[in-house]
Length: 110
Image (cartoon, rainbow, N blue to C red; front, side, top):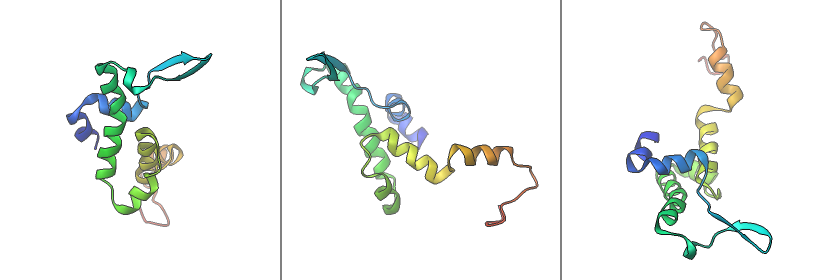
């Protein structure tokens, strides 16, 4: 998936990993997202990368995975959930990496 997304545009992958580009302005003493119609073409394109990433991700999922991530507002959140589904949490990854070579899982024989 990483290679596929990067082949379309590396900036889409960047938005997926680091979160979306959201230009901000200060209005009424609060920092708020700048309205889309006030963005330059370049910034508008950067802001669109998150939507493109969400489209790519959802197009590649089975129905079960789709329902697990379909309510996510950001592609990064979708990706984080899918990483846990497919690779486990960071604790699981750490345990796998540091487990003795001859040790196997008693439940699944791996």
